[in-house]
Image (cartoon, rainbow, N blue to C red):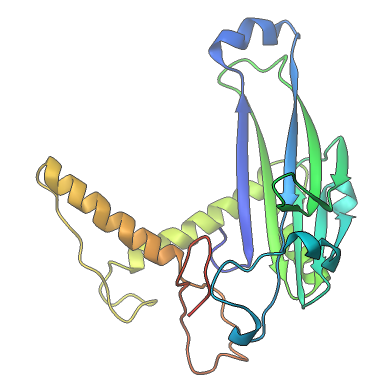
Length: 247
């Protein structure tokens, strides 16, 4: 998750298992990686527009979304016709094929977006070498803005620029984590105490404590529209980090 951008970065790694090395070196195996690219977003102007719960698109609402290929076939855009909301997803590698998927699964879950097929030739990949693939998801109030943000995070041509985006996000979140425990930090009005564990039981307590802090920090909204939110500068999701509204 990017720290100060409406974006999420995914990275996957595919490598040959030790017991497969002989067959792979002999050129007897390749794999197809299917990457589902789904990024349904919707903007709600007030709390009256939705109930407390997960804002989602129902089975009979898939026609309210416009799906299109983008980035020269390297990704997709999903635009909500009912609000000013759009998402863009792009791969770091050019897929061999890209299928748009405005469909519904057997469970009734909307599958709106795209499915990119990446053919990975592992025949010359001796361990510990691995194939790495990145996916950038950006959301915005306009389709062009979402495309520009996603392209900036993953411009293509491999993992080089994308890895820099991941490193920048990691560094920004590390700064946020350190600020939570640093007196006089520039982000929070105060700071939390640190614990010193002297035995195994204390280690368990410290683990619960720090994971609780981490969970809390991950729920902080990092982007607030100051044009409409002039009375406050910080907000946290109440049902997050996966679902729930913002307070």
